[in-house]
Length: 544
Ligand code: G1P
Ligand code: ZN
Image (cartoon, rainbow, N blue to C red; front, top):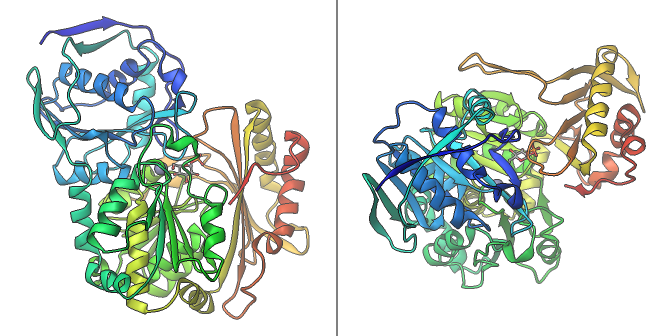
């Protein structure tokens, strides 16, 4: 093997976003684009000589090309071993587990999550640290800085690795070990949940549909749900991963899983429906006649986690991203445990999980997880739900209603305006930010008194770091909130996210239609920010 040092010129746009560097495939296909970015990552790290690096991706288009490049660059930079999922595949939570389980130095996760795939879709690369979680901002900032001045990268002249063959191969002095992507992850799930109880539930006729959306969770779901838990064959649909996700949009929400949702609303439908996204970290939960919002799901999982063996001693605390509804806060209050509000993105949960201050974390964007890994975990959420249903012997609908009757209901919705002109979106946010100091105390709309209005700043209680400008929050005295921020994962223009929340007490009305219940806040948000007028859009692109 010869180590080659290849000259290159920097790209100006390699700034990692909410979750790694996500770009159009065509951007990634530019000469040295992958090479520059991976070398910039390695240049920002210290002490990895001879260490293990984990690699795997969601199998989307370009996964196979990028992973071979990454293996050569890792060898040339002096890693001792690469652990890679067969076929270059690892779901994001499985990658996180493999990093932790094998005490790796870190990992490269090749994914653009729920964004569409294929030659015209998106691709992404994310670096995770030794705790299995996304690199903190200190590292992502350093990577960006390095990417702007990089002038060479190191690679080898070796042939591609056979990623179809489980076992060990070599690239010069570096070992490449191809592992089964499912085995370690499935074994971890068996330690957390009461597989016996869930198996008995399926055996007694409980019916479920799991939509793997032609993405990475197919093999995991077939193995765990059908083979280990005995759910009938056919429980997992769209279970064969394809590089363009079958032409679909692998985001498990009510827009892209409408068919499953509608089926769950019929008497003939199954008892339980669930789905996961492109890389397996998001989840969608629907019971018969009951869609569970991700914010409610976080609260419900936290309140019932003790029913699963892995959490029977109780949970230490809960963390949620700032835009996520405050439903979980009420559970934490009742349990007398810590509650943390963090900026959007899983990387902010890592410190709290490592410090043992929280056990369960979640985001309104269909992400929930626990301290078993350092990523959100779609199948984990599905299995915890199954465990809770098996233990409580109640339907999802009954469990949700009982929860609201105890804690009250946080009506919640998110309105996305996608591919808005970036300058218009930036100005809209700036102008709203400028209004904030004058808002507290004012009565707006229909008798809503502003309690606070700010641009969220997070002070990490573990490492003392500060992250400013994380989204505008306008909170009202009755517990309602308007939150507005720009997406950090979009690849074209800007995506404006508007989050709305209203609280109904335990003895209040819990059967209203969500959009109607939030109508006054939706109106008010538009008045304050001028969304329709400035963007020229009459409707959001996606409502979740
Ligand atoms: C979105 C979600 C966020 C999630 C991220 C990665 O980020 O809103 O909660 O962590 O995807 O899955 P955004 O595009 O809003 O920056
Ligand atoms: Zn994802």
